[in-house]
Image 1: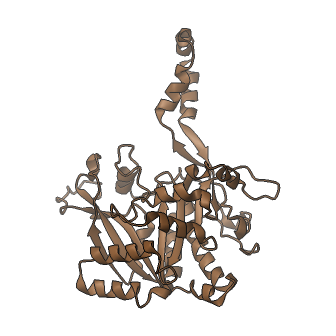
Image 2: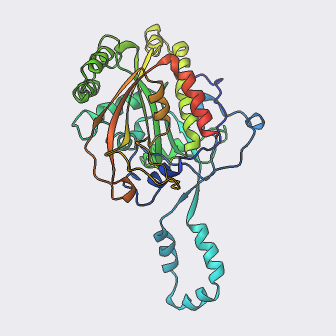
Image 3: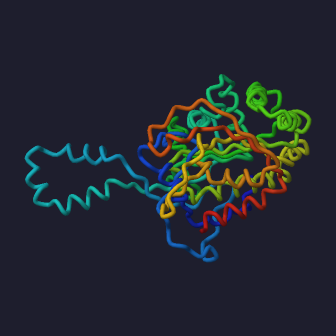
Length: 371
């Protein structure tokens, strides 16, 4: 990748609505382990991006570190304390105030994240993120992961950042080379040309699945045309991340992706490869939470908002607003144990977004996280 490319400065943090926050960030949430959801760090003071230093070259894919804090299970602190001798109970009681402060520090851990090109050693981490991509359908998931990892010019994985080497580039890859690097993979974003990879078994499985879950005849015709006649200009946009992924980095992920798409139309070695990134439309397959029954009329003084649809990834709501057409379908999902989610069911959502709408999407996403 050209070393002269620069990445935009990160946008300020944005939170969810109070209702969505209570559902998605609760420790009891049944969706805390799903790759589809996301959570961000504590809000940071607003900084003037004009004073911020420019990020590293595109080739390094180094994300500017974020000082987010993630909760650690209380059992970690308990285990560390239990390692002391039993005679230390009295001393612990005598210094309770100091221990409370120390315990509070042990409950948080600072984490920095960085962007990297996909590589073979990311296989297991990427596979984990994509495990439920087609719900419970048996399909060539391994082949799909291989496609994601082989396309390094367009696509990014997000991992824990390591110390910088002498060249100023993140050396997180050193850990990956040992075979353990994919364990700290937190996010993935890429786009695959449905025509270019149309003969791969995994893409055939994907097309078959999408056509099978589309119930509306008119929409199915549009979908079929997109998957067959127009496939060479359609990009399958895939963005997956875990719940503890800092939301303030989401706009930067999309900026990275769409910048790489634009660069690939100029930098790829052959005209055929350059043209394969000249997308006219993007196809997205995501998940949402849809209310099972209409909400009861709430009291006038009630401040709680009952939302008919919850987007675990907030950018999917923007995509849906800008989509040319979309449809939902039921998926197999375990019932959440969280009380607030008992009236919601998990649904699949397929959207078609024209490439000309992407600049508007990027502006809307940036505005959303800067509120």
